[in-house]
Length: 318
Image (tube, rainbow, N blue to C red; front, side, top):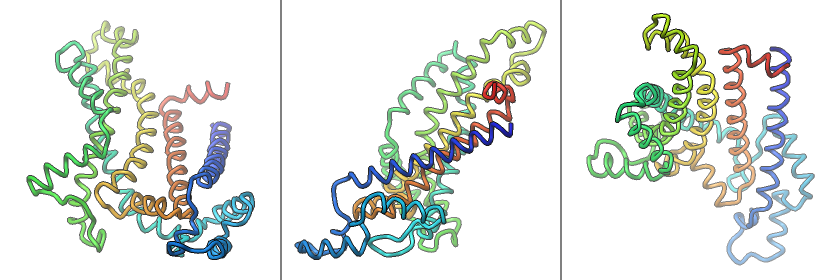
């Protein structure tokens, strides 16, 4: 297990470094110049060159990357080119919106998908089994922002039950108002995420229900629920855990997008502003934090699989 952890940690570090290189290079290939964000329209070439020297974007790319990597290694994500504020503290100040939104949406998606997916598999021979599967397939094709707009139209504009967007100025100082402002974004993400989760849970449950060992347990006198609970849950959970880890990471990235739809002061608005202003430190900081979160969640999901079934560790090291 220790050898496996060391190997996976090395892969995690290598993946994060590769993502940092790709992120840095791709940002520099995008059209636009961050120096223009600091200058008025019609600035002269001399003013643009002076702004580039001030920002450090006139240095060779390798020097810029080395300096940025050194700062990241010391947990310094740099300063915004536009506001000159440190990027790290600004990201940390927006996480109290993004993280609760992500965790609440993921939890709701799991609470919807697991029982519905198991029901669709256990009752595949009934009319509602295929109906659930068809609805889940349709839900996968629906964009999250479109679901959000529908919910806003229904519950905010027509019924006037919930706010259409925004977040309390005092943040979580007023928990009731904060929770109320997150209800529609949470439901939006959860509905979209649960659609794909339902299909994965259904497929994993069907594999277990059709397994020989489960039929043997039934033949020995165990009821269908008892046989599945005693012999099938662990085997069905192994592939689902990997999917849950992937979906949690996807939920985090989806939350960044949905925040823009609901005007939430999370990482989404900060990222959109950074892209529009070509603010490299802001974009790099948010994308690096997002990438690290995705990789870490995948690592923890892989570890959880090994804890549920230690045989996977032996296969990986053999």
